[in-house]
Length: 146
Image 1: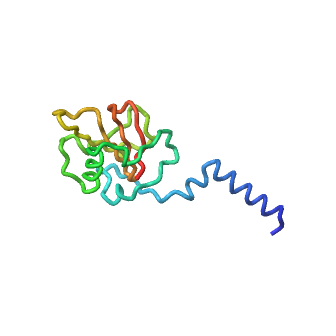
Image 2: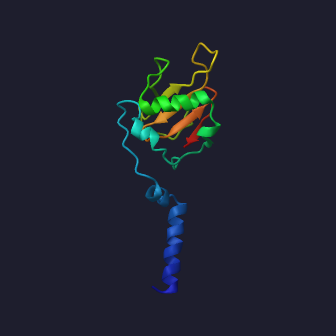
Image 3: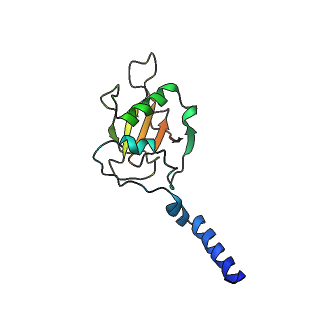
């Protein structure tokens, strides 16, 4: 290859990555959401990279309260969950999470000591294994880095 051809190839590759082509090529394969239920333990434990269309901040598992980590562990093993609503479809009506088909997201309560109700803390799990944290009952979200 000539130096010019190498330069053109490298420039095209960089342009492709900048325009998002590289995200699809470099990202791990995503499972196809079926909407039939919450994500499986295998999907949750894989710790996917942030979705390409993510516009949220992130938070590491180490930064979450202990109760949130315990909720993630329950999601990974399929329960049992403390509230009957846990595992219900989260419809993303606020539009803050990446747009996905209905049934892609499921919500889980993060209980707090001394709080008898569900409170405001939630983990939302996606069918591709992604997890999101909200401490304000869906007013904001952060992608959970694992």
